[in-house]
Each structure stands twice: as structure tokens, then as C-alpha cells.
Length: 87
Image (cartoon, rainbow, N blue to C red; front, side, top):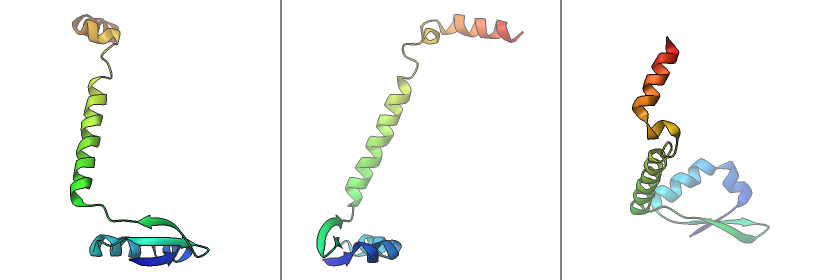
């Protein structure tokens, strides 16, 4: 496991991200000689599950947007009223 200073990490962020991804090894970040954080690779399985959960949550949220609105109770009446207003 590699250890780098926060300043060094900031200067070469992209290179360290690539290194973590390609080597699947963590990097410890230090500030003033003390470890403060760790950059750890995300396993593909976890990333895939996370993406699926985000999508499912978004679909659930979208499905409930107009559930309690007046329009959803009488959609045909609302459409007729809107069309009449356009004329």
C-alpha cells in the first residue's frame, strides 16, 4: 500500500486515480506526516449495484411525482380543460 502527501496527491490526482483503478490497490493520504484518508478502489460488483439502486430510486421518485396532484385524479377532465384554454 502506497502512502503520499495530500499536496502530492493533489498535484497528480489523475495519475493516482488511474493507479488505484488499474492496480486495485489503496493509497493512504497523509497530512503533516499523519494518515488522514485512504483512496480505495471500488469493486465492479459494488459499482454496478450502486448504479442499479440509483436508477431504481430515480424511477420510483419519478413515478410518484404527480400521484397526489389534481391532474392525476381526473386526467381526461384536466386535458379537456387545458385544450379549451388553448383556443
